[in-house]
Amino acid sequence: MAKCVTLIIGLLVAPIFVFAQDNTNTLADLRQDLNVLYVEVLKLRRELSTTQSSSIKTNDNQSVLARIDSMEQELRRLTAETERLEFKVDRVVNDGTNRVRDLEYRLVELEGGDVSKIDFSTTLGGDLELTSENTVSATSEPELAIGEKADYENAQTALLEERFEDSLILLERFLENYPDSPLSASVIIAKGNAYEGLGEIKKAARAYLNSFSLYEDSSVAPEALTLLGNALVSLGQTDAGCQTLAQVIMRFPDSDYSLEAEEIMSELQCP
Image: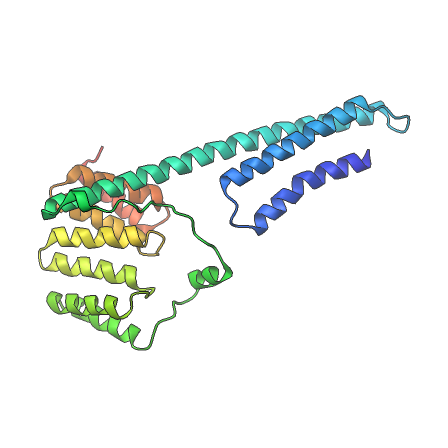
């Protein structure tokens, strides 16, 4: 009996430990593991219910079966919850991707471009390889090339001094000189700020959209999406602006920009 209980505990704990160690597991992998566990529990139940040994007391046998019942119910609950989460994640990704594509289409129309040449290959929430290197970079200061920080600060200074054209030149040069810079998302947002300063709201909206769609996992993604929503409202696209601001609240609920988005939506009386 002790061996049976030990086996049950091992079956339940081992996959959880493995899952904790392997961040690449998907919800589908977890659901498959739960299904395997469920089958193993059923096998143990059948073994306990059909094996009668003089060394096992009836009360003990019933107690173990009761525990297996409890485990079985919990596995069913976890499996259902995993399927629900998987469905929700897929829905959010699909909805977000469709909204970004719709915004891309509208901006191209506003700019008078050819909508047939829009590249819709990007999918939000794509697979990311989580390595120890990625983890360290997320919690430490980004490594910058020689002169990179100085060039960025010069562009920001020009922007703060409202020398918008100079700022745009410096920002464009920065992106050319440092194409893989960890500051790229912020630089593209700064371009949008400069365009807004020049009254070119369409180009500003394009910059904000590019920053978010290219760097949706960056620390400035909530800011880019909020600024995009504001720009769309300024362009008379209030419905699209409201939808974009709603995405800020849904995707980044813990961000300060989520509160800002709520305030703007309240002022606009968004549905």
